[in-house]
Image (tube, rainbow, N blue to C red; front, top):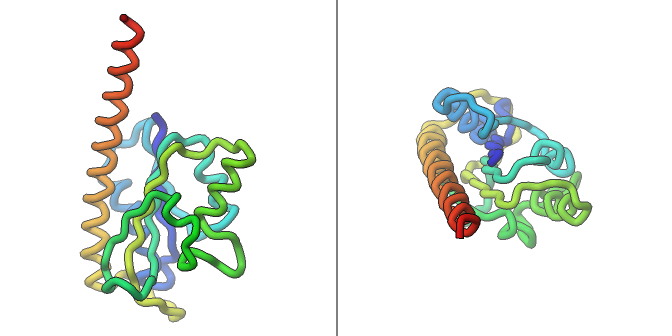
Length: 170
């Protein structure tokens, strides 16, 4: 079962780089193996299709500003929850969920399950490196959430394998 962890954002805009920071921390923690790949990107839209192609499971981490939750709040969605989201639309490119849906319609191999973590930030157009203190705390929490998801997904995959094996030996 191939898994992709994808951190998105731009570290030159401070808190906007939180997805990349989470991916970097996971890279330090997780033992490198052929089942989990960790990537970072500052691109979105159609460009994301290439990164997701060929994986069974993906976890995407990015910053978001909904204006509905406090700064540092960590949202968790299945990507299908984002298909009709106005918040995830860019006027210069298609949104994440639309890109994935289009790829699936074109029979491009997309992950069966995609979890998206969105960490609330203040929007800024000022260059600054490093995360604010509250977003550093959220990044640490998000690392733990992703590790929990990986463990749950691994357990779920093992159970499916056991069920399949039991069916085969009957």
